[in-house]
Structures are given as structure tokens and as C-alpha cells.
Image (cartoon, rainbow, N blue to C red; front, side, top):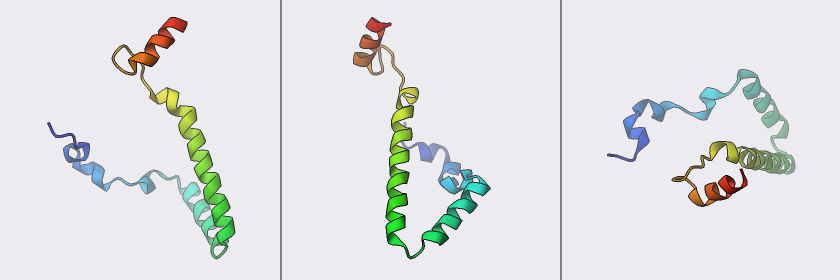
Length: 84
């Protein structure tokens, strides 16, 4: 079995993040990009804030995306099982 998921679903190669953007979000992002054009210091601040927000979102939702069982993350599951 091929481990390449994209090979099993060739339609996935044509899907890009821009296909999921809400039109108002895309328009707002374009306006912000026009405002900060030529102002590198503002771009650095916004990029850092965006990275911080993405990292926060990732860590906040990591628990929701992690499955615990006797076979997956077993050592952590044992601790949770003991507490529960």
C-alpha cells in the first residue's frame, strides 16, 4: 500500500487554502496588505502577531486533536485513566 495519500486522491492536488477563505476575510487581508505596503516594521509586527495567534490556536486545540487509547499515546492514556 502506498503511503502517499495524495496519490489515492488526485483531486486533492488542486485544493489550496485560498479555496476556503471567506470573501470578506480575503478582502480585509488585501486591504491590510495595501496599507502596510512599504512599511516593513508594521509587517513584522503583524507577522509576529499572526504567528503567535496560530501557535496559541494550535496548542489550545492540540488536546482536541489527540486521541488517547491503550494503543495510541498509551503512556499518557495510563495517567489519564488513573486520574479519571
